[in-house]
Image (tube, rainbow, N blue to C red; front, side):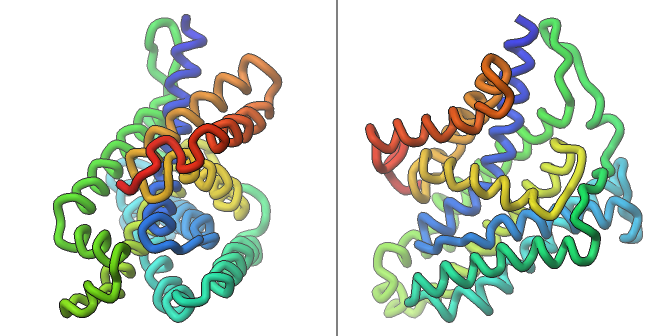
Length: 295
């Protein structure tokens, strides 16, 4: 029983991390039709900025208490700014040229890890964090890491925030209308480009938050972390349905649990294969994913 409890909670924590990365990717891909391979680079920027600040390089920031919160905020801001720059300087000029758009974002996804490795080395660095989050708590006989609960709570907050933004705010409605008929929205005097930049910024912020909290989950940061998580983020987006935030949330939970249980009850590493098999089976049965609709 204790093993099942531990696997469920660690699977939910892993799923929450996948959702933080995939939610922004799903918005950008599903609503703007931009295949953003640079999304993993935004995660890496957020992770490294948080690590750098929490290591004592930013005044007021540190590995514990309010200092760590400030480090995470700094990391999220760094990822958000990077996302806006990518949208303004790289993606926006290529909105009508999807192939060049893909090549440009792939180039960024390769350049950023190389830049991070060039500055701080290619080895993993220990991620500083509050001691309380590195502890465990007892539940039904299992000792569960506290940071898994932090990841789940952050994912729930991000999911609720994105749903409110899309369904209850003017900009959310503009983004959805702009995707359906961009010319009509522009004719009404609304600048759709600003709304799209906002979507990119939100996506970058969510990815950077995933990078910051991913440091707690893995206990370290390295230049290849963003690329590894991006692969599973794409699996989540396709499984949940393009552009569906709720679908991405459900898919994240399913994939996190499948991966954890498969790794434990079979051979370590087969969890990744189980996720791929699950995706292939789903695409055969439901080509548009679990929801098959926009958020």
